[in-house]
Image (cartoon, rainbow, N blue to C red; front, side):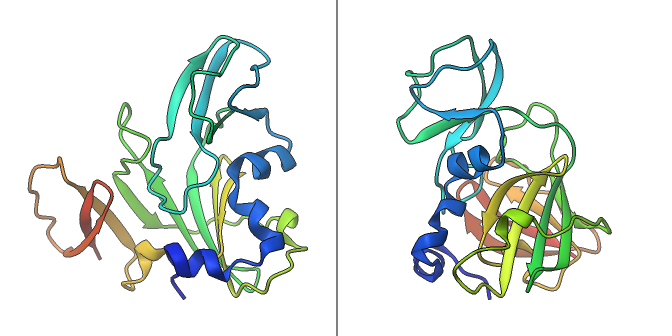
Length: 198
């Protein structure tokens, strides 16, 4: 099941909505983070993004140098420590790892602008923080950076619904390129035209 927007939101048990609030999720996981209006523990670079974003695609996520105060950010945003390492998206089916993909992007590109997603073999146990959810979710998608859980969705990864093992996003600003051995699929979302898949 690939849930999106209204259907995804209406599928969530009210007692599990905290999972979709990335600030609450980060705080429960013990990360260094806080809402707009709180001060950072030390001057540093932090990731700033919306607390909730069902639209996905990394909308409005960015790296900011924060010396202390955060009142300049939108009230719906939060700041969090930055994790290093691979960005991995995993679909768990009834808490068992099913699909694992690695995302890569070029240095200096926007946080939304992925270069490629590809299936990999890599094991991350189902996050124990999700063991006591109230609702019944057949599929749960989790995103990790350096094995640190950063996002949870009660749905499957929609970019691999074509039976593909790779997905190369095509962005509105990209020059036209044809990838031999790949098929182009139109899948407009935010600043993306679609994917080259195989």
